Structures are given as structure tokens and as C-alpha cells.
Image 1 (spheres, rainbow, N blue to C red):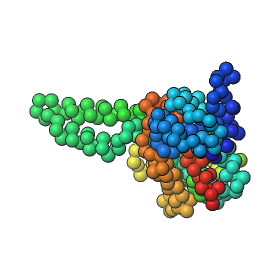
Image 2 (cartoon, helix red, strand yellow):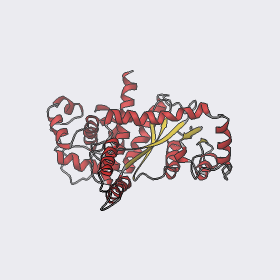
Image 3 (tube, rainbow, N blue to C red):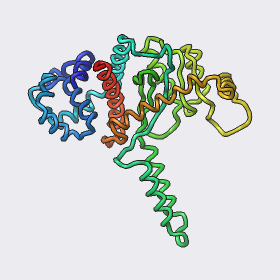
Image 4 (spheres, helix red, strand yellow):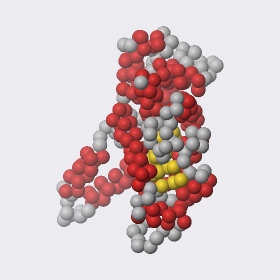
Length: 317
């Protein structure tokens, strides 16, 4: 909480408006939101926890507990895309200053994951769908129940929250993140993820690895021709065929993966999956927000909390 407050002091103004009551600074509210996300609490339970922890409040200069409505409004005001980007910039600078980044020796790993909209797993949804299909009437209305279940599943997939990240495979620091709704193709996210991580690390990215979901000739050209970064992505997009890929870089990838020439670098791609596992294990796999806009902000906050946790571990060491 103290570290989150100190980081926010360097990136956030004291108050969002000069006409506000000035009871709390934005840095203090950000630290409270980090505590809320760390413990997976609602806004009301966060208020109760802070009220029972007066020493925590004194550590960040608070004399009274923020109301749950204040925290709810601060969630929208603080977690804008620009402010989250500046916080990621600061965390990357701190890791670089401490010489903890390993991009000179290990690749940048890119991957995405989906979060649950409710406190129920995809396995539970799948079992419910199978039970409904097994009990559907087969004589009077054949296929009626199965069609309705599949339509409901399709609607859920279009609204499912998705987080894509680019991480330093050596220290597990999230260098860039994109959030959106819908379980669509990963390829369009590659451009922004790579360019943001490349900028934050002062062009230190030498190799980037990603799974077949990011396979695209355009993505290879962005990495290799624009940024001079070696991209390693297996060819997996399109219908199965015995013909070689048509693009120059995709054809090269097919040849190199066939003889396992990039196995040393590509094996580090699993480190991005490790970061997703760390976030879901420490912060939960389901989101508490209900609207798509607030779900996107909650995913960005989780990425920031993950980086702050890593920084705390490094300071303690």
C-alpha cells in the first residue's frame, strides 16, 4: 500500500478538480484501490477493512476512511488508459534502473487470457450446457434446446473480458497490456503490445515470441522491418494445407519450426502463461465489475498490481 502510494505520487496530480473537497489525494485513493484488488473485496468491504486498519491509513497520510462511494468514483477517474500507461512507464523505468530487465538475454513473451464475468468457471458452464443438451426433447422440438444454449454461449463469448500482455520472460514484469471484450483473434493486439514494450524499454527488445494466435505476415513485418526485432511466431492461421505459407516471413517461420531452430527462444513463451497464472492465482480469475468499461479498467488495475507485487518482492530481497 505504501509503495503504491509512493508510485502514484510521482504520476498523479494531488486532486482531480480544484473545487473538490480535497479530503483525499488521488495517490491515497489509488493505494486504497490497490488494497481492494489485492484482497478481492467489494467497495463496501474495502471501506470496512480500512476502517479496521488505522495504521494503514496513517502510513499514507489519511486521517479518515474513504467512503465506498468515493472509492467507486475514484475507480473510474484514476484508471484511465493514459494514467495506466504512465504507471507502466514508471515501473519499467524502476526495473531498468535496478538492472532487473533481462531482454538482452531473454525474449519478450506475448500472450492473452480471458477472465470470468461471474464467480463461475468455464467448466461449470460447459457441464450445464451438456446437461441441458442431454435433456432436450428429441421428438417434438428436435435441436431446440441445443440451439438456445449455443446462442447463449455465443453471446457470452462476445462479452467475455480479454487481457493481452507482453512480459519480460526473465523477471515476469508486464511491459504492456491491452484489454477488450470478445474472444476474437489475437493478431490485431500484437502491434500495440510490441511497440509499447519496445518504447518502454528504450528499444532493448531483441526477440519477441508469441503463439500461433498472433500469426500474421503483417505482424512479422512490423517487428522485423519497422522495429528491427526478431519475431518468432509459429504458422497456425488458416486452413490446414500441405503448401508452404505465401508470405516471406511466415514461410521462414515454417522452415525454422520444422527443424526446431528457434526452440531455445520459443520455449520462453510459456513465461507469459506463467504471468497469467500468477495473476489469476493471486488476484482471482473472475472480475467483480459488470459493465465492459469497468471490466477493462479492472484488468488494467490487475496488471499494475502484479507489477507492484513484483517490485515489493525485489525491495524485500
